[in-house]
Length: 423
Image (cartoon, rainbow, N blue to C red; front, side, top):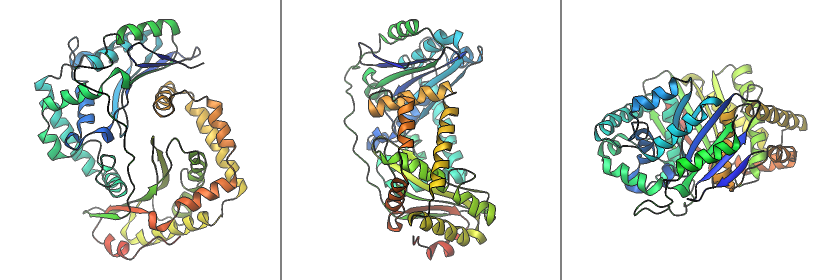
């Protein structure tokens, strides 16, 4: 059974021992992401994540990488809109080393000036790489259309001008303000000695004070407001990369279960309506899908595809036609039951991954303040009715609420100017 422990300094420890496993996944999570940045801090959450890998008072950046590589482990970090986390996957016999490396990385970063300047250029290259990738770039355009200029709609990575202007003192201040024990969750899944893991994490996190110097826990997040509109970018490339959608449902909205099944039926797998119609029967594009994403207080539903300019109009009309059918109650009971079986099957496959469990526990703690039993999720999925799915479809598939972003040749404009979803 997974268990939750609250440490004396306010940090939370989540453990899910798996005796049949031979590996362990350990993550240190901070309840801070790009949406928590002030106007003059855009890109600092991501930059701080990078800097924590650049060395501590005990380890150089090489030492951090070498200690994990030498035992066949994996180490990485990620910054999102709501969270930042650092993790190691390793054979269970190296759990103690993994805990030591991760806590050292998060608590004792040296923030060296020379490493800071080198990492600035790395991030600038990362920004250029994202700009050069039409898939990445259209996602950023879409987020900006849907959520506007609020932090929630801005690129997590920042932009060139902002990163060029960042000073090391800015990162140190951001770290002191946001990397607090009260914002921290340690999530561990895999083979472990439960008592030894609790003792080890308590000892390693003991110096991690709940309040560092003049810092204070960030205030309550304000809910971002969705917008409608479109952003079309012209590039000298062969394909059009198109993304459209609207606000969906947050983790705290019970409609997310019906939306998960609707998404499966509509466009989230190879047998989905959208893929079968546009890719298989009509042969109009290689890649097309729908997707959902949930956050603590908002969510997103989107449809994306890439196609040639000459096929753009036909793909748009096919997507519109399929949306219209689903919105008007065309989904069958058989499709819903198939979607439920697929969800359960995918859920069981995911449960085989310790990293998936580690991530899921941390997310549940941040959103719900508790660990959600696996069977509770499956019960909620099973309880979804066809009326629930139809209700969600009617709520979401409303033409005036769809935002659009597109990247492609200039000729795309003549097809997009005259197009409007009419479902």
